[in-house]
Image 1 (cartoon, rainbow, N blue to C red):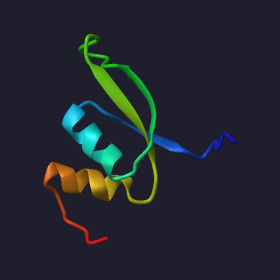
Image 2 (image 1 turned 180 degrees about the vertical axis):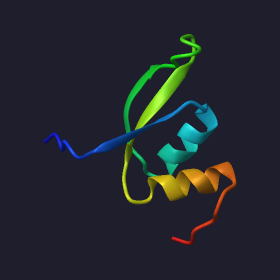
Image 3 (image 1 turned 90 degrees about the vertical axis):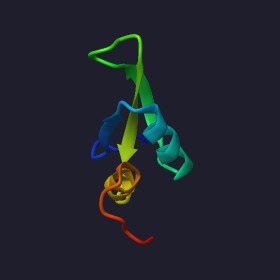
Amino acid sequence: MNDTKTKYYTVYNMKYAIELKKMGHKVAETVPNPQKPYLISWVFEVDETFHSDFMQLKGGARNER
């Protein structure tokens, strides 16, 4: 079941990645950070709440669920 319309977003901060996972967002894969290959980046599947949840974690606009 491969949805070709699925969008992805790469997160470079482990703290944010952990919190996004706790919120139920799915990691599609982990990859080396392109600028610091000794670090890991998390590639998340983007759904309708991903960007608002990510902004909330970063201290941006707060949306009620």
